[in-house]
Length: 120
Image (tube, rainbow, N blue to C red; front, side, top):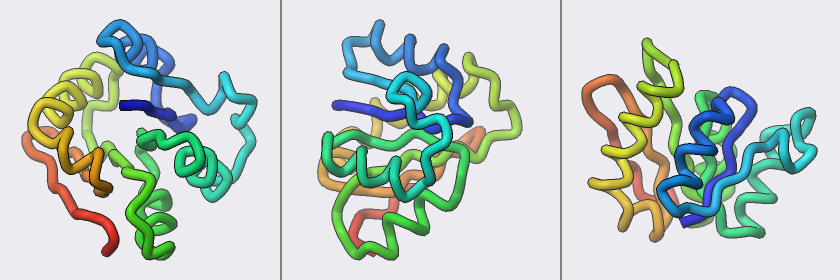
């Protein structure tokens, strides 16, 4: 799986994903630190990347497109430290990788995550 992290996601999470063997980039590394959410979605779709974000707008953009990509993981955590984000992301990847490869929006909370298959 390939990922692109929005500006609200720590570089620490991107580095953690790389250590797990995933292809992960941060919007900042792609010189997209000032890019609109729509531009990031376009890049993710083109490169077949899953968007990691804390911003609900990404789910709205993807669902409004009517398409099956890109998948989006939205973190809705009280504790948004990289360690907690990584712990929750590990669980999501363990339990919902198949859904992410098919196309989904996943909302991640402290104790659970909800999967909505695309298109909505």
